Image (cartoon, rainbow, N blue to C red; front, side):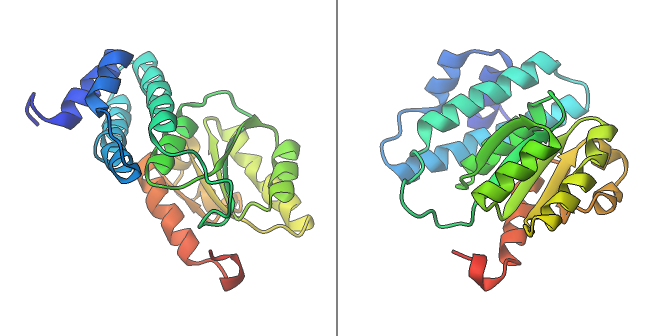
Length: 217
């Protein structure tokens, strides 16, 4: 990439934590299609690159955290608000289970929003609260992010509790324990795992394609 590359320029504003320059780099788009396009062209690839840089130890945690916060704020401001009428997708939600490390969830949430999906953000919840909300909201696709292995293992309890409640959402998991043990997602009863935010979007699309007809928009 050259210094004139718009993705690199936007990426640098994020790493510098310069909100004003970042907003300027996105431009002042008028139509909804143009706003979504600029988010897909700049925000999504920039978040993906920052995630890669963090994995390689080339950026600080504070830079990654603030980049995620800034992108979430800008995505919320740029994309049109959720339609109060029927949404052309089944109900989806994302949560951090028994953990307070929100970076992974924040990046996945931002990239999914940038890709045109709407989903409820449950924040940090324990297993009982998560099951209650999923049942209450009729969630069809549930994304769960964890940082520590004990939290990952609790996903099995969530799956079992949902089954007992007669609720059977697709569960997509992500986080460090699942990158270290690539079979762990199967052991905790998940339907799929994603190693990155971009992969999360791909997996969500595949899961939606597998939905029974009664759950499809």
